[in-house]
Length: 115
Length: 119
Image (cartoon, rainbow over all chains, first blue to last red; front, side):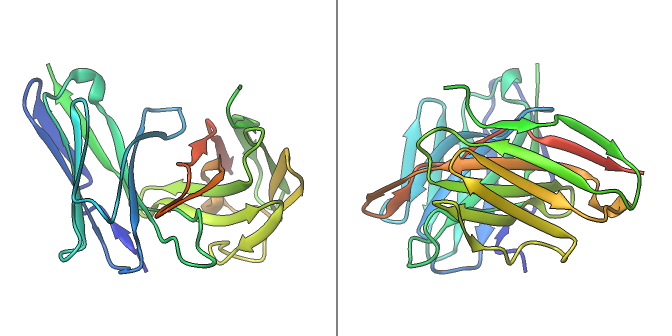
């Protein structure tokens, strides 16, 4: 049972344009969401996060939006740069008893930014 | 800090052999996670520890998989006997508890992974 889903395996955008990566979740107990970026032959690295008390969090070119009613979040990258080409993973956790720290990841979306 | 350290980086073994993957978490982190990356499931959580105690091993695929954390600075993931379908990249990650409102833990910091190939 995939609790965190990234339905688009890949995305290709032109340099300078906006990249939008999507993520859906099924567990209503999730209250903290993260995006990770992964380059080949490296481990995933943290990019940006959002807690359920917010609907938007921004960090430079990266913005994460959370729609709790739809159980959906998205990552916007603007403007996109060739160095952003990587696999992006969405992750979620629930802060309830027994679940602290447990991160559930999606399948990942491969972003290619063309020069 | 050197970050999360995993060894070996690459492992090629024959079917039926025992494989041991190793992880040294970031000093001071009290959570340790083992993940497996596959195309179908992405990053799949296998097991995680808190203060060296296994908390949730529901993601361990079969009894052939086992994990230990004898102390705060070392963990192993063992596969015995290994099978070709175990071929994947295995990641170790660590985090620490901050207990600040909704955000109870820091984000997880990942090692560079071990690419396992079982032939």
